[in-house]
Image (cartoon, rainbow, N blue to C red; front, side, top):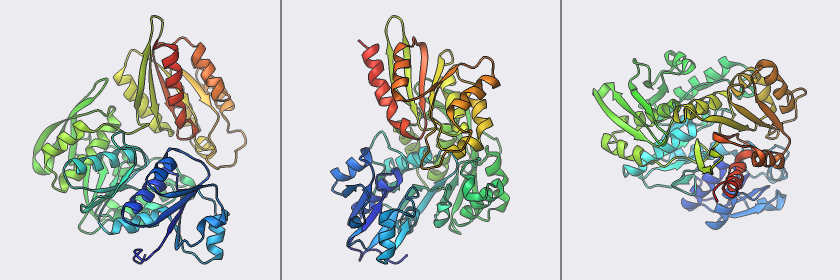
Length: 470
């Protein structure tokens, strides 16, 4: 991609998406003129408007008038009127990942890829580098609790970003350091429904890393570990496994934090870590961030201090509040997880934190295709909660698949386990009514999903506050 400095206006279609909004803010801070459009007014759009980016609600061909280049997100359909107008007027159209890879090429890139844990790992790396005084640029697919936005333009040498395997867009990047957190069965529609093709893409992505760079890879993940012999870059492995280059041991999980020891074998040093993040999956995410920071020369003391001060990410095992009276005692947690592996990791962490509490899960499945492809895994993990409130599947633009619906999933769960307890939830009002009339004592109420359920926890928080905290 040629130098963009001469462009008068960059227009972004779907600018309110979590990835697009971060890039928009970043480019504005790099002195580009940015405009955008989206179909709804959300928190991200409000933030962009507040910082001076012009955003139009609704798509219309007039929105692209005088634009020099159009950036669009993967959620935008090819028949979008702004896409068609750009094609008719010979205005260059590029994907979100293409503009991100161009911006990263101006600095030393650090990319975090993998099926799970990308946002948390990226956030940790960004925080460590910021606290160490390296003034990084970063784009994160989630909202840091310490910052209202999810991107930052820094004057330092490093550009940190998560990259996406769902549409193969992570193949656009040539970073100094690339991370593979894990490889799991997801987004196979982009890979001819083949795990081999998915693994090959991760191999290609790893081999796109700079010759002088490193591939940081999870040693505990069987699929990630299996591809290492096909990667022709220097590898740093991390994990609980004793043959890892960067190893965690003595892991201990509390209610508000976890602690563990980290050994970096190349430096023959062991040091302790304390972090607000809980769960062994988050210990692995933390270990990946430590591996990156260490190989780039960040002082261990600075790493320890940064991880202790890290305040977390919104909707990642986020404790929204505790509510109690003489009859009820509830802890409300909000989490973005929507894949069976993510649900399992979150449940395990909660069981470690509160081993004697009952877990009530409010879950919204995400995509008909994912629900169909991973149906057995969903049945297995969802049957492991004490009570399930199951919402309708969030389509995310997909066409419904016959026989794949939450009503039938509830029936399958009852057939799978005679001890299963749960109910189908028709709409949000139905959910709020059931929560209001339920007696929850010594319970965890866990809200999970990646669709419209993202706004539910705040409303449940208000409901429980009015009901119990009086």
